[in-house]
Amino acid sequence: MAIRDDAFVPGLQSHSASLDLDCSAEEAFALLCAVEKWPVWLSFLRSARRANSEPGLSLGSEIVLRSWLPGDEEELYEIDGLIANYRLSLVGAYSLRRRFEFRIERRTTSSRLHARLVYPAYHGRFGSFLDRWQRGRRVASALDDSLVHFKGLVEFKRDEAVLADF
Image 1 (spheres, one colour):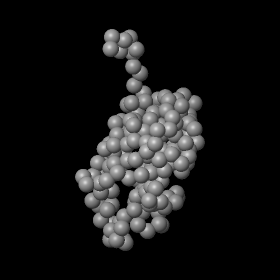
Image 2 (tube, one colour):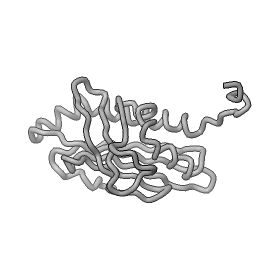
Image 3 (tube, rainbow, N blue to C red):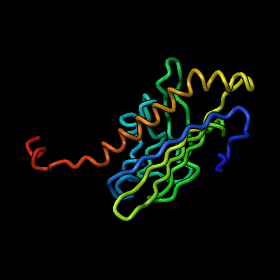
């Protein structure tokens, strides 16, 4: 029997999903590192941008995210885990309990994307229950839909001749 590592941490909500991709890990990781494209496939984000104009992602890089919830302000996240073509992990700059984790598992002809979202739910057990009941199902469904959008973007092969006129 598998037990989640955060199953006994009070006040944390965790949602995870995974999906097989028909592309290489390098292609998937390249799209994953395109922060400006996150709102296209991460359906629960309204905007995403880098806090500074560095050429690539590195440990300590800062990313500003705004969720789809009305009234939510921009939140600052920092990259605390980065392994090229394998893992990207973001942690909230002001709350270490907010976390996004993406991991790409390499297969022989394909790859698999694992995504995990962790955020705090306040007001004890009742608050955790209420959050799971009200917001948790929507967030889990949005995470599943987001991976399907990611799959569509990374597997879509453009015919360059079609775009040559533009």
